[in-house]
Amino acid sequence: MKERYKKYIVEIPEEMSIPYAGIVESPKVNGEQPMMLTGGWRIYRPVVDHDKCVMCKSCVLACPDATVLLVDGGQKIGFNLDYCKGCGLCTWVCPVNAIDRVPEIDFEDGVPFQDALFLLPHVEALYAD
Amino acid sequence: MAKTTEITVWATGVVQDKEGRDVCLVLTEAAFSEGFFTQAFDNYVDLPDRINVQVRKYARISDAEIENKFEYENHRPNIIGVAEATIMKGINVCKGLQDGGYLIINSTKAPEDLLKYVPEKERKRLKAIACVDALGIAPEQLIDYSGAEGAEDVSAIGLGLGAAMAGAIAAVSGLVKKESVLGAAANRTAAKRGYDEVKIKVLK
Image 1 (cartoon, rainbow over the protein chains, first blue to last red):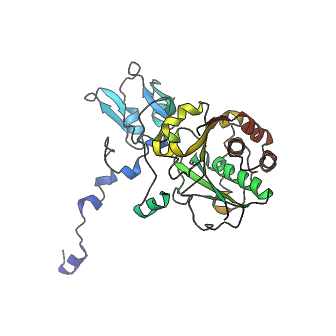
Image 2: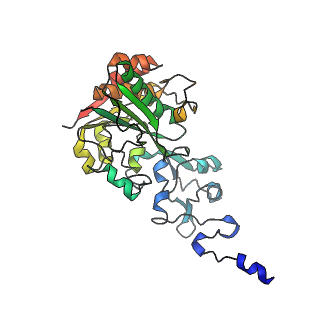
Image 3: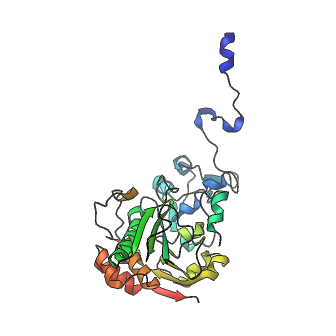
């Protein structure tokens, strides 16, 4: 490389760089980006019938948020309910109709409870007495 | 001292965008016909609107000129409407609620069952919690963006779910008269049924 182009090369820190082929890792359970939790959007929760499931993994490919997980050492399908927004694509692609959509309000747990959306420190004061 | 009542309505993005807006618009139009100073607007932070994201719609009703007219968020609401009950599971809808506030939810469940989603601090401030089966009364959820961002609605105001919710809010809070709500909503029957069929649990 010619010497005069050297000044245009910038070191980009790891956390700011775009991953290879733009592929982002699937969100981890209980962690990562607390401001981007999408579990609260969910109105219908996906529930797998493990007796019907044939482990074709179509739902793993179809999930736009990569929230379909392989649990029990890759033997079963599970969901990361912190980020699943209940779009229903997994139900749609399932060839054996093993994934049901059950109203989220009928479950006791599963949704991370947030105090507010996108609350910045200086706005917090406006909510106080 | 002017008395301003602030209303926050929580709805799901895109699907209930118009319905959530209609709740605010029906109430403000009804109040305007009674001679109140009114204002209705969307939350700016929630945008861009995505399917099923939690969105907020605001209304202010005052007996004098609204002082905080250019504040774009209701930080201390008096009345909170929830157009889809599942929203309450993921977020504290009552944040910043003023003492003696009301909470009106669109749900087939009893008000007592949904009280567990309100944190202790806000629960003490609630005067009454109410449930109305607005989706059962008026199942129409029209997706129409013509009325967004201050523009005029091409479709009529209060065609579906929103009319029933607005009727219920009027019944619980006594903010506006029944006749003016029925006059403001395009779906008169839904507003009337919402007004009559709301289940109220008074807490204090």
